[in-house]
Amino acid sequence: MLQWLWFFTLALVANAAILGVQFWQVKHAANLILFGYHFSSVWTFWLAFSAVMVVVYFPINYLFFYLYWYGYHVVFPGRAWHVQESVWLAALVVTFFVGWLYLGELPAKNAIVAVFFLACALIAIVWK
Image 1 (tube, rainbow, N blue to C red):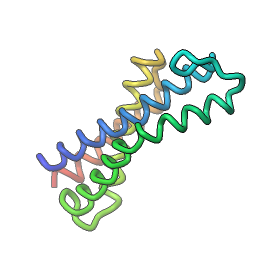
Image 2: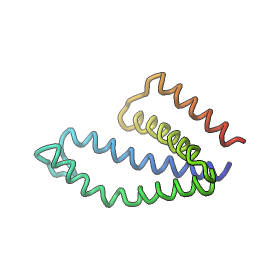
Image 3: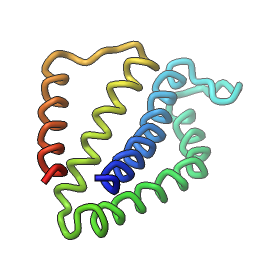
Image 4: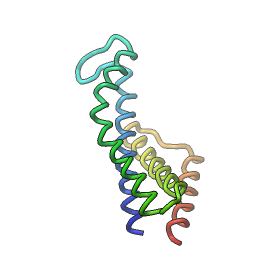
């Protein structure tokens, strides 16, 4: 159980980092300003943003690589679907909180029900 909690915490951190960067980009692409510089088009903004993100994405990708290795070899040996389901749950939880706290949006009722059922399925898998 503790291995899964460590795995899930890593998944939360990795997903929060990637989603935070993506939502930050969505908000700043509207005014085309990146670090105080105004771009003439959204295409040049995204090109500059992508160049800057090469450095930012390296540690995030490294964390994802470790996360999947750890999940597949330690937490759920040889069971890729359990690893992926756990990462999906972390992504949904992070999306809920980042969307709510950063963008001020709450999901529809159907999405809440889906997250609940996915969480229940993962608890049943991990509980054994």
